[in-house]
Amino acid sequence: MLNFCVGPVQSDNYVREIGSCQVPYFRTPEFSEVMFENEKLVLKFAKAPKGSRAVFITGSGTASMEASVINTLTKNDKAIVVNGGSFGHRFAEILDIHKISHDDIVLETGKALTKEHLLPFENKGYTAFLVNVCETSTGVRYDMDLIGEFCKRNGIFLIADAVSAFLADESDMEKIGADVLMTGSQKALACPPGVSIIVLSPRALKRVENTDSGCMYLDLKRALENGERGQTPFTPAVGTLLQINARLRKIDETGGADAEVKRVGELAAYFREKIKAFPFKTVSESPSNAVTSLAPEGNLSAYTIFTVLKDEYGIWICPNGGELKDKIFRVGHIGALTKADYDTLLNALEDMRARKIF
Image (cartoon, rainbow, N blue to C red; front, side, top):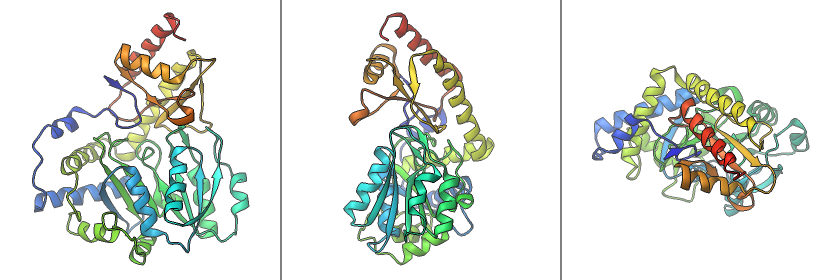
């Protein structure tokens, strides 16, 4: 199968080879060295401010979303959530569960965030801002420079979910003033799912120190303490962390984060130019490099396109869920993909058109 999903994505052979090996015991100096290097490279690629730390959670990106909330926010906080899709809604759900007050900036599907959306929230006593850098369900990339300036101006703690944006779009924590940034192993890192990563600025570390998470497994104090010796509090996804190490090292050897963002951006541009020949409307006003969201014109179901490509052409694209199931499908640009792979997808779509499927 050729995989254009937004996660899990296609992995390079060197990553897959590690996955075929026996998983080693991990309470060793050798594994600690791997974890030290993982943290060092993640901090480098996130352009985190001096004194930042990174922790590795055995759990999906949602685990790190919740961990970030319960370890840095309390019921005394008053948060703003950008709610423009299913993952913005997930942040709102997490805050509701933990009884943290919040107001949402609710955006229509595919719409960009503008300064006009932020104006009503100026100087209103908000203490936290939660945003998905890329709202993966719609492919929208929010203007992080705009958000960063707003948060700096208002003294607001900024939590940025970059699960699908990290290494696909620019991630510069210091530039935008992000206090927390998270990502996942199955996105642009192109490893199996099961590990998520949280980068904490010095200001975030102070919040973690002074906050009772009320949780054992997602307690970042424990994670940070164990990370000082290159370890984790509990048994981690050892094999995946070794794959992450190989992937981070390869990115570092081939130009670093900026080069990877450029590569992904070029794939996205190539596909977006070619797809103009088909009866699909681009959904996002401000698309992320990570994914292109498309809405079929007419009465054709987006899910039908997904099903036909999967069952008859051996190609995975990314369907949507809920009310968007039949309206939008997504094509990812992260992972071990090439322009030739996109030509294969485009040829399959052309064949579907010749067969009058659309």
